Length: 439
Image (cartoon, rainbow, N blue to C red; front, top):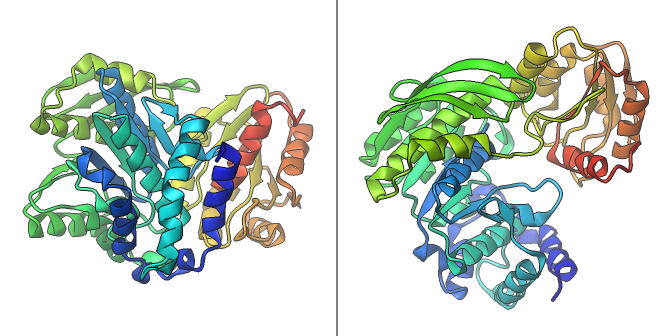
């Protein structure tokens, strides 16, 4: 099996009926069955598990980068990928090689095929990629694995692991059709990653989410570390290249830190990452302050308010809900005041496109609505109709790359082209920009 055949096999799992089951019917038993057939690779791993609505991926990337800077071998599983499925399985910041990936899929395939006749059916795409990551991390082996939860937490495929630290990034409304339409309901699902007598790090939360997390920790006799109370931060200089800040941790003050990521929300994510690193001391993982400094300074996390190029500025961000879009808008207002903003915008119909549009559209001068390449893409004309409530100049260009070419033709050297709304939109445009096929 080569890499192309491996990706084709995984893509075929997307259309399987089992992957379309209701969330309440997706049983961890299926994931456990697959892992059992693979030799239970997760049982040998030391894991940090990260759930939340906003900032999960960035926080995972920061934790991984800090640990790697301290000399550890670190596995990172993050989702979804932007350009290449191998991004989901990284060791020390490098995606798994194509040949290794193909070998992993070849090893898994007979087991996933055999599961078709079993009680649970074959794994979903996400379950398969999580299994591949766990299999790879156990074979390297890694010192620690940092895993980003996919959907919710309680029934997520990553929740088969037994984390040393469970991390909760900010929780807000998203996936409401699956997880519930209140913060309390969503937080309850995400708090499912908390373990008996475990350690939990929580980023600052809305009141309802904070109450759920605290109550769940009490129920499980878990120790709760609250960022914003026991671990705090002070933001300093911010530029289009990154930002400076200080973190006041439980075991020390980390001064004059720097991350090459934009937005005040990333400082909160950094404080959450540092709080997690401090918790790992309890398990013998001592990370020196200099590794925290170097790890944060070297973190790379594409398309999270990424300034891809300048003159015109091209800003790429995978924001797809009101909370993450508010963070993007704050960056535009802070770092690009008075600039003309051309928004290349496309969303999935399963997302809150009305609420998200209400946040981002008012800061744009010209919107180009387009359609992500995905079965659940929202019709661009519907998105345009919503946007016209806030911006008079809204166009529809269905093809993503054509939409970006049009934006480039409209932009002056001092303008900002902002591409956002969907991983699938941003990923395809970023790939085209890297390959220089748009100019």
